Length: 143
Image 1 (cartoon, one colour):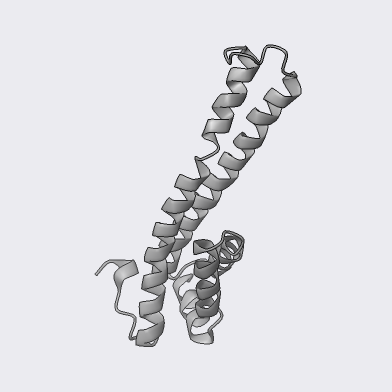
Image 2: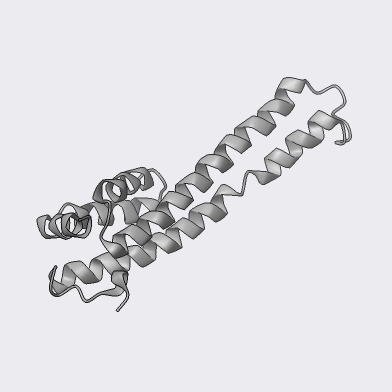
């Protein structure tokens, strides 16, 4: 059977193994939603580019600093959001394979600030990852 779909009854209790599988799937879902939400500032980015190039009617005398703000700030937000989405999806893969406990723990902490889905996912992931049996399964999987 595939490594991340292995039967968890030998290493973990049935509940812990099932919860790790569910958290793995939910990380994929929330990672996709985070990636989608990270693309919302694209409108502001396009607006800033249009202001800077003068293609936006009525903004010929708009300061260049405003246009650059509308370019730099959305770019930072998009890059941060897509990076977090990538790490969330990667943590979902690692949770299913029971590898890299510290990275999964860190991603769960980072998800806490993204209300409501990230907060819920982060809290439940932290609760599961703090169990001694789950920690032992991660330690055995990292060998």
